[in-house]
Amino acid sequence: MRIASLLPATTEIVGALGRADDLVAVTFECDHPPGLAAPVVVRSALDEGMTPAEIDRTVRERAAAGLPMYDLDREALRAAAPDVVLTQDLCGVCALPGRTVAEALDEIGLSDVVVHSFDPHTFDEVLTGIADLAAAIGAEAVPLLSDLRRRLEAVDAALAGEPRPRALVLEWTDPPFLPGHWVPELVRRAGAVPTAAADGGRSRAVAWEDLEPPEVVIVSPCGYDLAGAQAQAGPVARRYPGVPVVPIDSASYVVRAGPRLVEGIEVLARALHPGRFG
Image (cartoon, rainbow, N blue to C red; front, top):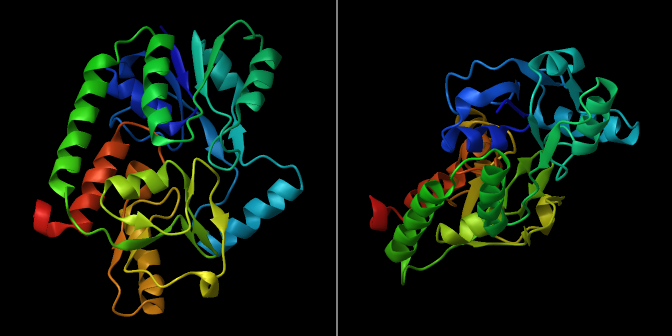
């Protein structure tokens, strides 16, 4: 099967299911599993090197003007000749919307291609979505899901009876955004209580002065790696002197709805409860 994955999370899932060699098209953000050789057919419409404030302003301006956040190379997608296209309709800022993909497929004569939309809102839906995606590409999901659930049970057992600090989780820092979708549950599973987060809903902008004092801050800027999170953690730490600040590679372990969310839970649990994990 020839698979075009237009979402980093689905690329990661395809790899975890042992089908990376079937990928014939990916996006510029698809960096896992390492060593992907498939052509890039989706690129960002934003300039590199922008600050978080500049990105936020540009995204708002483009959305207001009805401009896309991503560019799809239609000819490259046609040349890839996929049997199935993996896409999403969860967030037009985070990835190319499925409706745009469907329109493009029709324009380039690939309207008969199977389109599978991956749109989880909660952590449980991520796991269910992995199983559904596996079925769409003819893969077996049971071994992967069994391993993920085993690791989750190990974290639960290690945290039994452990005090849980109130955690301010920042999905963006300029302006500050509180997380939604599956992120609050990740934090709870890691042994903290996320404040003012929206389970299953969208992240939302807030004012710094409206945030209650936290016992720990988790800096998880959407799409940034660890170095980017560390850079943004500095100004946040100055706002909360004496409060532990934990930056995390959000692009790999928090906002990408794939198997490595479980690794994100493990990483956060170790950071928040070193006495239990070392």
